[in-house]
Length: 199
Image 1 (cartoon, one colour):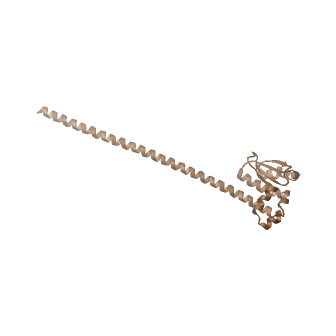
Image 2 (cartoon, rainbow, N blue to C red):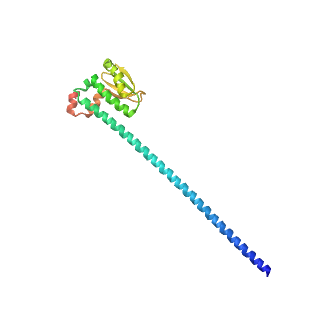
Image 3 (cartoon, rainbow, N blue to C red):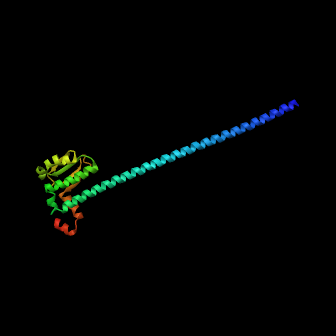
């Protein structure tokens, strides 16, 4: 009887141990599955956070670029308007582009607008016929107004007006007699155009 009791005890012990191991393995497997799910969820959440951050950064960049384009466009339109107003006040665009006082006004307005939007040093080309009247003004007053020196040169080929652009020569804006007349003619009414340009 003692043998049977011993066998029964061992059988119960082994069954309990077996069930305990199975339960332990099941719990361990569930814990591993939960841990894997937590890690996977964390990875997905991290990827989502990174994607949102990248989208926000791209949105911010796009908005900043749009703001810069809009500010540049507004500055250019304001400069064009100032130039148009100054030109319309003159009796003749041909005379205006050779008048030193008028050129000083235009160059100051354009250079200030140009300097504010571009932020670089400026190169200016003027007619050689106006060198005596404009060279001292450019080197003293215009350079002081812009708070930086202006690279100045004179051209025999230019009868009136000027060209202006960055010192690096990447581009320039031309307000010579010909380009000035073409620019202004676009904005004038036919009667005014005929009066100024004889068209």
